[in-house]
Image 1 (cartoon, rainbow over the protein chains, first blue to last red):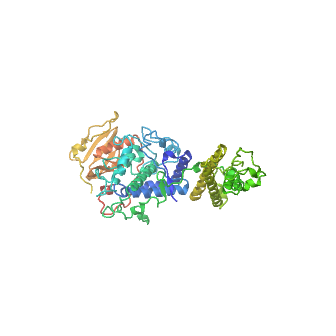
Image 2 (image 1 turned 135 degrees about the vertical axis):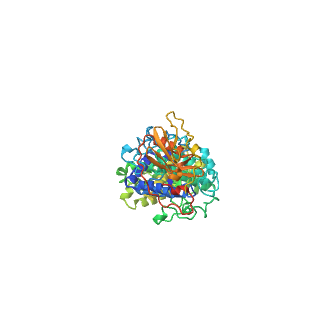
Image 3 (image 1 turned 30 degrees about the vertical axis):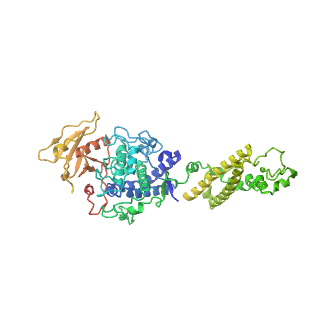
Length: 451
Length: 126
């Protein structure tokens, strides 16, 4: 199961706050500054040559893993700077990355990463975070969509001598931004300016959102050019060939090669545009509401399942029985003469199996509305009741199967014109319930996968 | 090894600043005869440009900024995502980025990054 990296512009306020909190926690335990130092110390291993993309893929993977160890609901968001392309874009709001720096010295004065907040003192090139958006004359604007389109159409992956030549026209050098630079990746660093300019650029948390988008573009390029492999396979600079061990991880006894970075799904994540992420659900908001205090004792879908009127009624759905010729429910009624073979009749209330007057269609079901354990409920009770999550999933999947089967039968009847307007409304209601149950199922399944 | 700067001394002493701000002022450069040191001021900050062969740096109000000279421009970890036509251009952009900031520029020990066959000059800076 892969987790989903989302466009930062689609994050809920709770998702943003949880990301920021995880970053703060990583900063507080010293882990964050380790990434800054690593980037500074191994700047040349990571840039201006072929391993630029795989090196940063591993760098981000480790960073994201550290965040998820703090809060398993967090994934790295990406910043599509071709769309959110100004200093007033929402990414720079005080609830997320915070704004541009002040004119005098570039210091970021508000937001979660303001020095005055006490949680963001830089260990290198500090003490405060700086930004100088659009100040550099070489990068007054962020890259345009057409720049990305052109880069994604560029092949091969890289060209000899696999460096940062001004006219070297492979994909890697184009995306990194040295070709006619600063462009694309480089241009974003320069445009943000301030702390994003030096080798210590991970000091600015937007570094990771920026590189997440760069990584996404590499993934997009790989999908668009499946026949284009990573080069150089050999003969390139040490550390940049396909099966070379990359620093600093090799020095730490961990062999990480460009070859091992090529399949990002195998690394555990996907991007929200790939179509393999789980449907977006508001589970992050829900956990924060801590509704489980109220909900836990009821476990609604366990209570409700045995009394689901629709399920009880399904076995006596008249139109099914009648079309098969059994007429069972009709036979029970005291007026069997009213039964007409082949006529589709609707379900009756089993508590009052008296046939209505001729021409009056009873409602499909008179059951009390089915109340789901609604999606906004917390999943926190699963921690208190070990094994309950699995039980809930099994029960819900059984219900879903029953609903699906019954809905199929009803929709066939509807297609034949056998349902009254009221029945059709009931059918639509059941469809909505079914959809709600699907959402709840996905929530439960996802919670089981991420918890 | 560091290479000879692409631009000659005369060109290097007159960098083509792209800054159009009215506050951008730059005094005439001074080039001491027989010396590799060039000096000028920009936005109220004094700049010393030391030749690449003599330590590869510019000094801005006493703060040293290392650079290397490559075939297609000047490269520095201080502004690591762009190249400059001359050390003077680098110094001016650094001054624009710093503004009035007081930055604790902590030296960082660089790890062993490449094998011997990696021909990047910037492996040897700092």
